[in-house]
Length: 185
Image 1: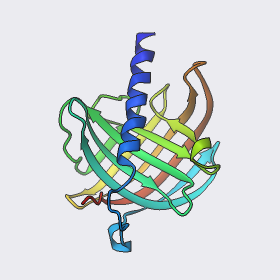
Image 2 (image 1 turned 45 degrees about the vertical axis):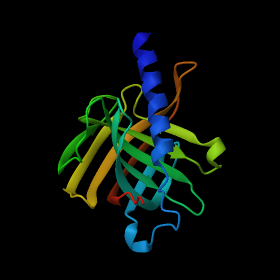
Image 3 (image 1 turned 60 degrees about the vertical axis):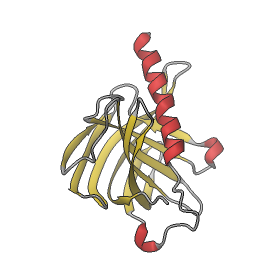
């Protein structure tokens, strides 16, 4: 039971970090050249082809450090996807290589993936995560520098009912991205 409580706490922190880092503080909005891009295919509970913008960012929350790649569409928003590393120590931008996506919420070598299907609006979003159960895949970074990170990904994730300890649905997501450094003023 203690492991489940730890995962629930980490899941709550992941959602909080996603809320804090999901928006750029560029009040005029980014130009076309400042946006990264991503394309993906989803199957399972959510079927389709998706495309959107991509950026990367690191965050220092004092006792917790985060590094993430964030992908979403806009106008209207129908999905968001994040790949996140969490650690109690500072995290460097990952270099080229293949990284595990899984449920290692505080293992700085294992990314967690969270996909939110917001087709019916943000208040009715369905969240799929690799944090619970045997879900995961791989994230391959092909290029990485201060301004841009490029790569591919493939993973499966679950919509997990924490209250009743059961899987409500599953998805598989694969795609590619060119993520630019998050814009900040």
